[in-house]
Picture (cartoon, rainbow, N blue to C red):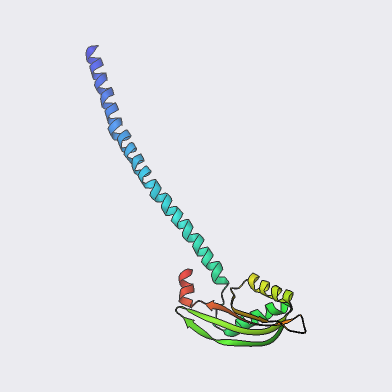
Length: 169
């Protein structure tokens, strides 16, 4: 019976050793490797999500800009907003587009008359416009006899060149 126990002990020890070194140790090493790579992979996934979010924001912002450097676009846009607010336009002057680094600046000067509430409504319309329109200068001269004042305002927007737009998509 002793030789049988010795052989059985050797077989069990060999089997356990083979299992330990053949299955357990490699699996444990793989677990350590996965645990070491896990923060890197999380960081990579977070970066991908952040880039996707930023690209979506860029797309939304780009959609607010005109696609063409035509100064009449800005003039038409602010005239529509002025009409919605009920202000009376006196003159509209389109400024020649200016190149600034990689952008083109479109500007338009308006002279109008409006009451305090009409002027507020007009500026609110500009602020809530789906397009990016900036007020560059603003001056008001109050009329002596009427509650409407004379207003001079300059609006502007920018146009991205096609190469900048293409790189963002």
